[in-house]
Image (cartoon, rainbow, N blue to C red; front, side, top):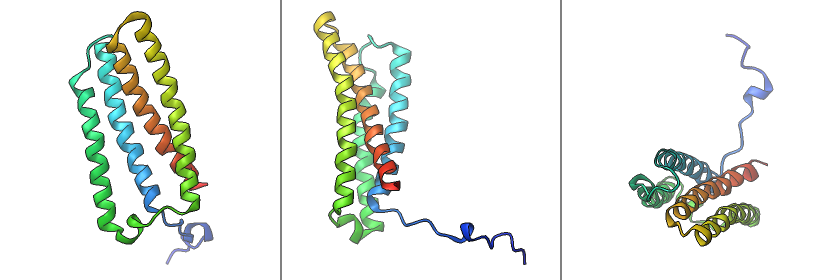
Length: 149
């Protein structure tokens, strides 16, 4: 038999991911895919176009994805999914949420300013929706990075 896989680095197992880290990975995927779809739809129609049906449908799609994710995690990890976050997880979630809130604020304030000056609610809606998806990516992406540290 070959000794090619006898290296210690190849035999080490990576630490098991927590339920919250699995959830963060899935949410990065959800926000990334749906956000990219919204971005393409908005860019095709233009920022000053009325809200596109695909963009409006993305909100219920995110909610449905979260519900499905939580149910699947509760089925596969019944004890871990119901456990409260430990101190490290609470800090990670708080820090990532803070960063995401700042990103969302950076999208909302210019959108509101544009509305005050130009009275164009379509641009405001489109910018805020994209800001929401970017902030979601930042929040869950930061959680993944912080969980991996």
